[in-house]
Length: 299
Image (cartoon, rainbow, N blue to C red; front, side, top):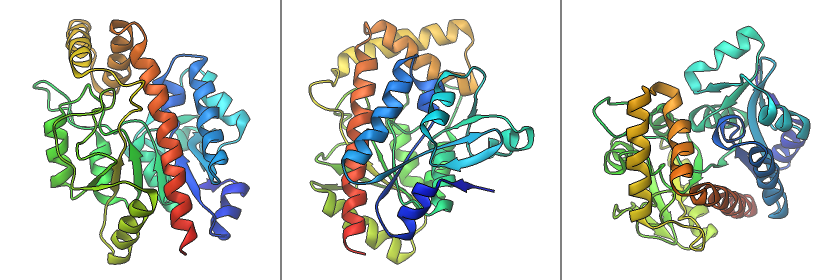
């Protein structure tokens, strides 16, 4: 039922490095035309680093690991593309429609195709406030073996609660060049990681040991946003507070909360948070590629 592109299938068969990429950032995460520009740029960053990109999504009811350029364009420029967590995958399959995969569903599909490394922006987690809205990303991270390269959890979340939830789920959290859990737009959160690595080879060694032990669940490799693009914690907190108030006033709930808040934060920061988002996504793609190459080198 899962269609893997010929390029990705060949690379996996030859044990060459492959990096999975999500499609929600194309359909819901960034404004047009930046979404398409970024999606293609992330694929190119993976190629430039010596790996094969595998953008994941559902096209006309078919879950695919490795979208073509035309399919990436379709995902970025079509209206009404569903946002899919793992539980939602059956809906577009049954209805033969398109769907963009989140962190959770990208992991699930990529793992079944045999891909081990996945680059994203920030994971979902525990939302702020009293609604107890918890992202399904946390569930999938606790049960699916995948090395997920990210900039921590999105700053709009309750980061201490999210970090605690990751520990409860048994997710190994490793800092890449940092002792702190990054805060997506900001480089520091004040929250610790479980271990620090400073090279792709160190990260690959820990992941290899994790898999050899048969430990379930993911390893988060947390990369701070590039320093020249990172925002200060004060600017981020101010923008998020204003965005949360707007969301409450407008009654935004469920799957719409995260994209709404990201757009609102971009508005409150004069577009600076959007540039940070783009920069960290590209940087994470590069780091993920380095780790995938390091993994492939020792097989």
